[in-house]
Image (tube, rainbow, N blue to C red):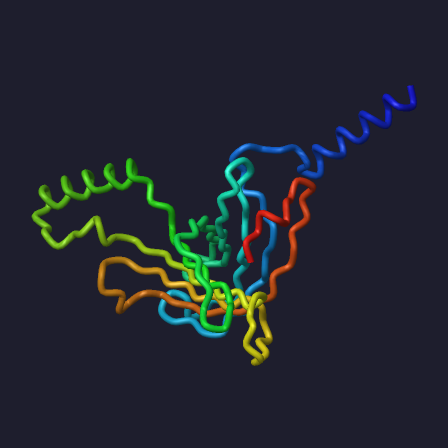
Length: 193
């Protein structure tokens, strides 16, 4: 009887600690509270942000989630970004490029909607292909081999805008030190530093 109670306790504790494997869940593995060092346009009054590195259960796909309080609307904004490119720079730091995921079906529906709107309104300058952009570049200095010391492990640059020229884009730069997020199913080997 005692073993039955212990087994039930372990099972319930495991569920509570997110120990259950969840296919498709973006499991957080590390996150950093970011200190904003520079911001322009829509991000000029941004005070802080949080960046979370995730690994999807089942596929091992890594992503980023960035969260911040929008200074204009005063609402929390959370954006999930797909990592599109990873490389090492000359000093061995890992450079990640990430952007909003592009769903071809949604993009096509938006394109059809914008095309119909431009025909009806007489507007001809709308370009659905060069619509909303949200890009993140992360330089992770934990793999750095150069001798110059970096005070923060992560340097982040974020750019948000619309259209193709980018002259009025909102941009911010930030720094932070990532800390592990402990979930029982985390596999540290899945993180590619």
